Image (cartoon, rainbow, N blue to C red; front, side, top):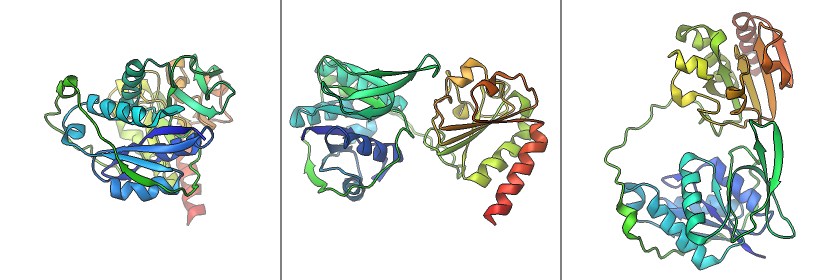
Amino acid sequence: MAEVLVYVDHVDGAVRKPTLELLTLARRIGEPVAVHLGAGADTAAATLAEYGAVKVLTADAAEFADYLVVPKVDALEAAYNAVSPAAVLVPSSTEGKEIAARLAVRIGSGIITDAVDLEAGDEGPVATQSVFAASYSTKSRVTKGTPVITVKPNSAAPEAAPAAGTVEQLAVSFGEKSTGTKVVSRTPRESTGRPELTEAAIVVSGGRGVNGAENFPVIEALADSLGAAVGASRAAVDAGWYPHTNQVGQTGKSVSPQLYIAAGISGAIQHRAGMQTSKTIVAINKDAEAPIFDLVDYGVVGDLFQVVPQLTEEITARKG
C-alpha cells in the first residue's frame, strides 16, 4: 500500500487534534507516515502510532523555531524525497497552507486547499471542498505530480488505529533561503481556558446584536457551559467589542465545528463564508427575516438577552 506523508502540528510534542484527523483521513488512501519537526518527538511518537502512523520521521534543529516556514518546507521536501508518497497532507492553518504551497511549487505538483473530506479514487485521492462561501461542494483531484492537500480542522473524527510508529531520523539540508526571515521575539497568547477557535467542536459567536463589549459575557457564559470556543462577527470586532483573533468570517477565521451557535448575527455573506460548513447551526435573532435563518438547522426568533441566559441556565442545570 502506498505511503502518505502527514505533517505533524504539535506544541513541544503535544500533538494537536487536526493532525489526528489527518492520520485518520490518510488511512483511507494509504499508510500514514508522520513527519515530526522540532522538539518533543519522543512524546509525540506514541500518540502518532496510536492513530495509525506506520513510521514517524523526525528532525530537530534550531532552524525550525528560529526562522519562518522555509526550514519546515526543506524538511518536508526531504521527507518527500525519502518516501515518494502517494500524497502529502497538511493541516489548513495559516502556516500549514504556506508550507503546502511552497512544497507543491518545489516538487512540481498540484495543490488542493481547505479540503473537508478525502477519499480514494482510481486516479489518486479525491478531495471535497466547500466553495463560493460554502454555497457548493466540489470534488477535485490533482492531475500533475504528487497531490499536496491541506485539510480543514474538524473535517473528520479522529479514530485510533494502532500501528508500528517506527521512529526514524530524517536527514535535512537547509537551503540558503531557510534563514531569510528570523523570528526575533515571541509573545505568548493569554489563555482563556477555552478551546482553540478553529479546532473547537462547539463555537458560540456573538454579533452586532450583542450591542457592546460589556454584553459579551452573556456569550462567554453560554460557551463556557458547553465547553465551547467564543467567536465574533466582523461587525462586533470592528466595533471593538471582541478581539480580531476571534473573528469568524471571510476576513477572519474559518471554522467547521459540530455545533455552531450564532447569537445576534444577521448572517451576512462575509460571516457565512467562515462558518457555513458547520455540521449543525443554531441561530438566535429577534429579526425573523435575518438571512442567517436561511441556512440554520434550528432557529430561535427572540431577544438573545432573554434566550441565551435561559439556555445557559438549562445547560448548567442538566450538567449538574
